[in-house]
Length: 183
Image: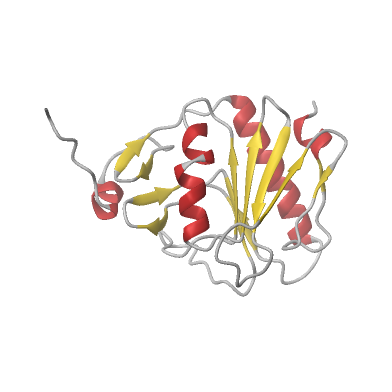
């Protein structure tokens, strides 16, 4: 029986992988998102960017990147946010500290990782809030910590049609779920 070689973070970062490739438990996972997936991620980024620009000191939003959050893990979230007091080196090719908020949009090939292993890793490395966007169900499943000191995601919520996605991390932010999934 052949054994599969697991890659280190450094080996993965030196590799020539397709743009959506991630390293999960040392294994290269490639995602080829649909246009709907990309549209939903864009809508979230735009909503967060508009909220950031509407006030001062609201942080930074982005997508992808190489988040080397734990050994054998290089994640590229569909959307991420960090507060203004959390420095991000915009010239770096990787970040070794996890984002504060992570958004993963459902893709057929990677949803099992998003709701499983990646969720567990995000929780273990201190992500304060995780949004899992379930496009077929038109809902956003939210896992968050009740306080910065909470060791795990101890609050969960689901936002669906007719509701507005909000977060205690993002004072004044609101995204109507109908706008997220609407035409």
